[in-house]
Length: 98
Figure 1: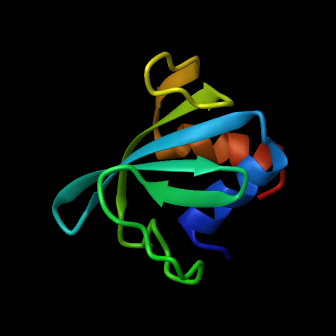
Figure 2: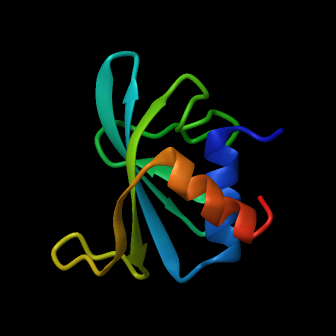
């Protein structure tokens, strides 16, 4: 089974018209992670250059997920859906087979 981060990356690879903004808690600290076209990047912390280092570790607690239309513009985000739970997102992952 792929990790949560890998599944979200695969979802955006299959739906390149979407950007996911994932609000998580990692080791007691909140982070925002953008997932787009199969890649993840932290919006609050440095992201490792090595793609094998997960931006979203398995122990992360997903607080919510926003789906946005691509391209992502932080000044004028175009939301498709806001505040999705991990459970709701899993249904979308199953729709695209990840």
